[in-house]
Amino acid sequence: MFALSGCAMTIPMSANDEAVCTVWRDVSWSKKDTDQTIVEVKQNNARRDGWCHGAK
Image: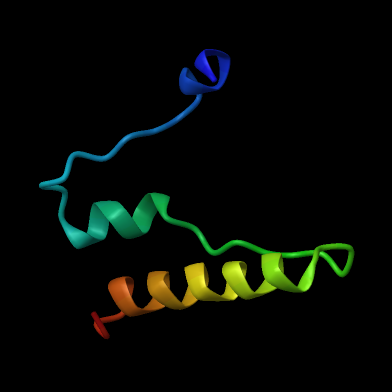
């Protein structure tokens, strides 16, 4: 856990939408992923679209 924390980028809670959308990228999946993983990826991407494109 600690080894990975140095690579993480954090955003302050007061960050504006533009800053959030700059670092919050869409996630892709592979046909090797489970159905549950694909559902979660789609949910993440839908949340990003809602946040970054006005449907909050």
